[in-house]
Image (cartoon, rainbow, N blue to C red; front, side, top):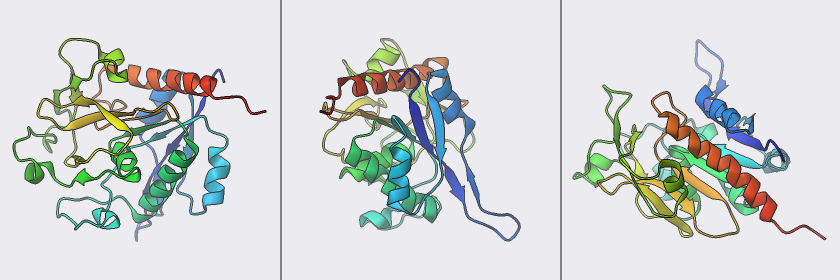
Length: 247
């Protein structure tokens, strides 16, 4: 596996009166995967789990891309007026996708809403709007500044520490939802100085899973952020090498 095949889900927009339906992906996701030595493979929103598993059989890892907000009503919570929903077709597929990724322990990197989806899938939950749920936090989104950034505090011995090392770290920030209760099996590996969770990693040895609330693929990312994708691709190699060989 010199170049692992890494799947990416795509964003989706339903048909409108003046345009057809579109599936699309920001180029930063697949460009970062390519630069890290992986082969990106875009996966449209399928409706059949057998088709999904046929596709996943061909993949060595997966990146769950960012996008709009998950519908809190699907997890038993009330809608909040600030929530900007993913298209329903994408969300239904993404939830099925995350479940299958977890079931087969496929290495995965969740970004933005992809991180939140991983947390939800394994039993965690979310703050729906940080300015109301945690009013003491610093701003995590500035509609007037797409390059808005804040500090990052990384946990010792984590993948995030390998990427950023010591010293002052700043990452882009454009979210209003965030992890509240962390899903079982994960540990927090980076926080904003106000305590908001910004990165997680799966703590067990039976799965390689990680996520960032910030966006290391975006134009507002730093050159250092590419190393997160490098670590993910290297982690795929390590994880598959460590798997027992079937008799």
